[in-house]
Image 1 (cartoon, helix red, strand yellow):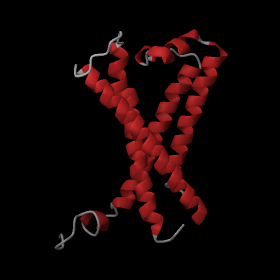
Image 2 (image 1 turned 90 degrees about the vertical axis):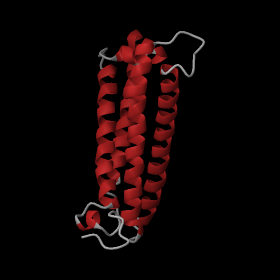
Image 3 (image 1 turned 90 degrees about the horizontal axis):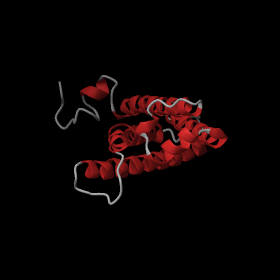
Length: 181
């Protein structure tokens, strides 16, 4: 039974069931890590010489990957490592260290990373969707297949990852605010 004034999130049925904003942050952290690690696997596959789905990336990235060589491998490995680091960052919000100075830095880094991912993914998804819908007409040639994949998968993944990381950061902040850890 819901008490008067309860929203269902703060002190209502979700909180009584153990699924309040803090639990949502934990679920979001694991989901953000899953997105990051899955995305890292794709980059690692390309680093190891795989070419599946590389045509869906388009542009210079596709040309660079198809050219092969040490440079392309190193870039793809670096991208994979950065994505793994992003996944580990999300997991750090679930199993944090117990020191106040680490909490402060973890909040700064995770909030900044989530903002970067949301802005990058959001701008690219929005711009791509405007081109696909005909609202914006580019002057040059457009790789329509790559653009569709960017709007529907690649850039949308950055947006989703950033949103999940933001929810995880907020949950961590709420969960640890009273302890100061």
